[in-house]
Image 1 (cartoon, rainbow, N blue to C red):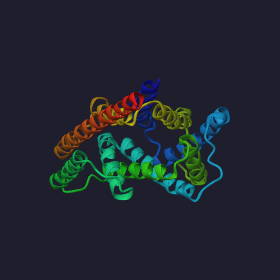
Image 2 (image 1 turned 135 degrees about the horizontal axis):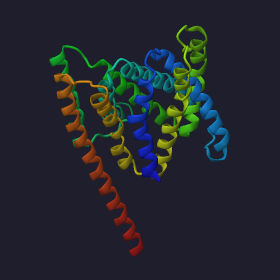
Image 3 (image 1 turned 30 degrees about the vertical axis):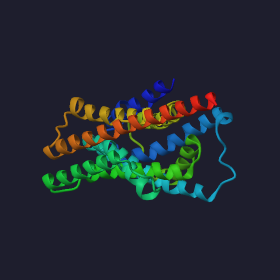
Image 4 (image 1 turned 180 degrees about the horizontal axis):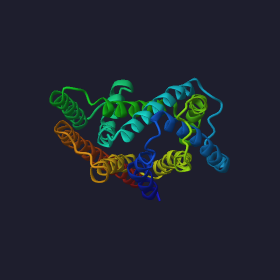
Length: 295
């Protein structure tokens, strides 16, 4: 079931969610974000009532739980940038951002948490930085949208790691923290409520397409190794990239082609190193178990 949950999560993020938001053409990204927060909060409230016996209660609250304020802001920025990318026809930039994200995670782990980088990981991060530098030299500008997506989601992941709270409870807390802002926008902004029922129905569904993939992801994380989950995460940006090129007719510019190529080389190195390390760890654990039984 772990593989099924992971496939449901990543294929939703890579295929269903971008098409859903692209269908909301004409609704501004801030308005979509406001609805996404409101309906996600209601949807997750219902789920928590149903699943309350299976959730890990975070109480009593600790000082570290205050970091959920920062993680809520980080995911709100990430969602807004993603909506801007999709609605403005820059799905390739969104895809690139989520391809870069794992390498930013590795760099943040080293800089903030003091995690030691293996040589291949250092090489992968270096190749990614080289790709960004070459793309900037070719285009004369930073790929700000892609970098913003990668860094905001990496920061979100780091904050959630530091908070260490149940995935659904943490997401629920974040939506509740963002809810007053979302409700204020929905009540005051002239573009918050579309005139036609089609767009209103699509906005109501944003709660489902936001919360369900996160819940499937949490279920997969409990059943799969981190190495397997880490490799499967590339399904989502691959799906976004294919949609952008095949369905929406986006054409990658030369600087993006070079950047994609170098990011892919970095990811292949990173993924191969992760698999090799996971195999060595399992082999060492089996060897240790065998020695214990022999003793």
